[in-house]
Length: 364
Image (cartoon, helix red, strand yellow):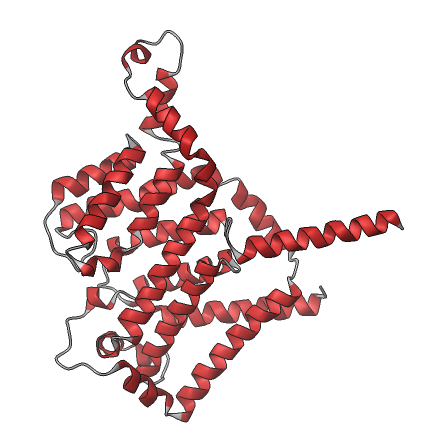
């Protein structure tokens, strides 16, 4: 690829990051920072009203076409950028830390939720301090990690049946599932105790009741560990689509309150409705990219940027409620798309094409 082409691609990518940074300030969980409005507006009528303004329609249409055009160009060109290759090589060395990332991502907010007096999500003010603090600390220590993650998953799903508001924290589901698959990793209490129990002649090894069972379970789920990136990116993608569709586009009245509360139109002087529409569409777009696994690390970076801008732009948005997403997005950025993704399919197709070319050249 020519130097001019690389610069054009990089310029387009930086443009997408700027768009994410701008819309990210309106990308909070609106239920966390506003009260229900006294009057609500129909979502379709709201969208039609916003897009009836020629400038709004031009900005939404132009932005959408630009992003779609960039994604199609990347599909056709598949640029080889040395910086990206170096980054992939560096991230490959971080894979062993992913279990620790995930334990921190779920353990810290669980402990915080227990002491703050809400259940998984600030939208569910239910006291469950002992349960959540216990789950959180055990995950942080890495003690009985897979069992604790399974207990946390069952607890969340059981509570979700009675509290639909917990969908605002749906990222816990892929988080718990991923921990069940990867285990505790290291550093962790499980790893230390396992090393002691597995060493010949140790006193603890004589009485340890779980080392053998843990090893058998680990061997059983081992073949599925490669699907951890898939579980994480699909789960996070669904969470972003939910936030964009349900919290923004389907609930425009409350989303507009966020724009007005934080005077976001002073940051970018556009119609408040365009802020809401842009934030919702951006979240949905990022979510769909993650679900499809297309330029996954780029989508994860955009999602991370949106969360960072949310924390800076909305000072009273509860930070603890976003730690889970921060950590899980970091894990996706580290691992990449994994199997069952467009990235994996395109990479395999590219490798086959390169192999065929080399075979043809060798034959000639």
